[in-house]
Image (cartoon, rainbow, N blue to C red; front, side, top):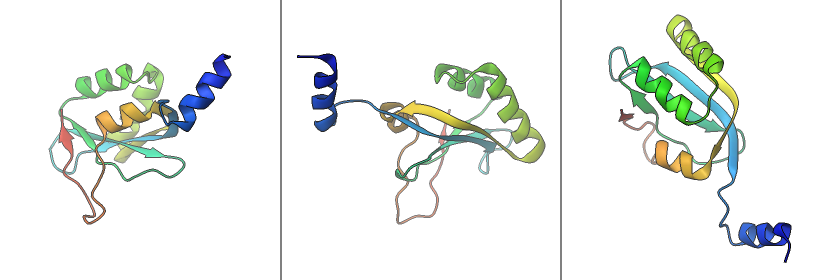
Length: 118
């Protein structure tokens, strides 16, 4: 059995943790002064996700580094959030597991969710 056959079988069984491409949006928190919210918006479909709130810039930088966001992109997005109110990291790829661990689904009955604070 070849690797491509195994991957095809796992894909059919939905056992692969596929990467999703989308945008990370960084903006000033609407619920906590001095904090920053990060949301992931997939390019193609997907459920609405709650923002993840970071009390400090350092905590946000650590989180973005752990996700593999290059330092230059972090600085640009955070700088845009500071100067314009929001910044973005386009064409970001993240696994479905990372999406589920970091951004809980937003209930469709409510228009917004309370952000998770770090």
